[in-house]
Amino acid sequence: MRLVLASNNAKKLSEMRSLLSGLAVQLVPQGELGIAEAEEPHITFIENALAKARHAAAASQGAAIADDSGVCVDVLGGEPGVVSAHFAGELPALPGGDREQQRKWQDAANNTLLLQRLQGSQDRSAHFLSTLVAVRHAHDPEPLVAMGRWPGRILETPQGDLGFGYDPLMFIPDLGCTVAQMDTTQKNRHSHRARAMAQMLVLLKDVWKL
Image 1 (tube, rainbow, N blue to C red):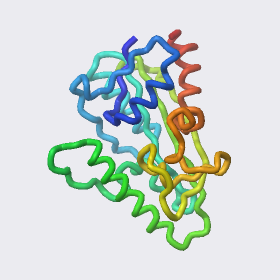
Image 2 (cartoon, rainbow, N blue to C red):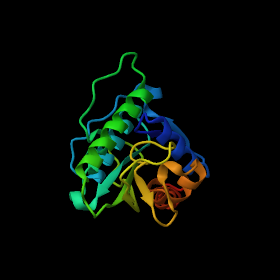
Image 3 (tube, one colour):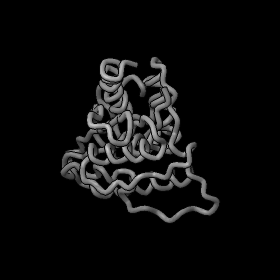
Image 4 (cartoon, helix red, strand yellow):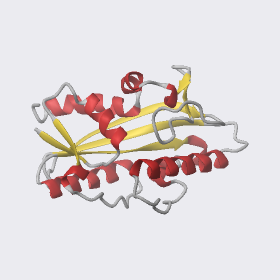
């Protein structure tokens, strides 16, 4: 079946395609279908994920899946939370419209602000959170919901050049490295999105019979 991903993030698409590879699912990013990104006005991950999934399902007239994820820092009361992607405010568009360069610029600004907010703090515990919502159609009364948490702590300086977002700052004690120092295979095995997807795979098989 075709499953529309309510995102245009190339790295997220690659990660989720790998995680869904065991199912007979064609994961298509909404941008390929000309679907604009949905508004995300809510204060919780689950509400935003549901809004994005319903938007993509309505526009594509079919099934859709959305991920709303971010980093939650304990001493900041859960911030950046749902505004993780634009924690430093949404930056002006770069000339040429290069989405990946825009994202890298935004990531750098977000990381800088997070380090400023944590300056002098001894408590740097945090976790990545992924909330996945899948719907069969825009008015599906029974959305599938899965959540994955990946605990770690925020470093004082970035380490590693893989991944995206806050990966260079998130140190995972159990693995002895930052997320940005992991290759794709290792990240897909341990990440918050992998944990959420493990739950979602069970639901897709049991409820949607995939």
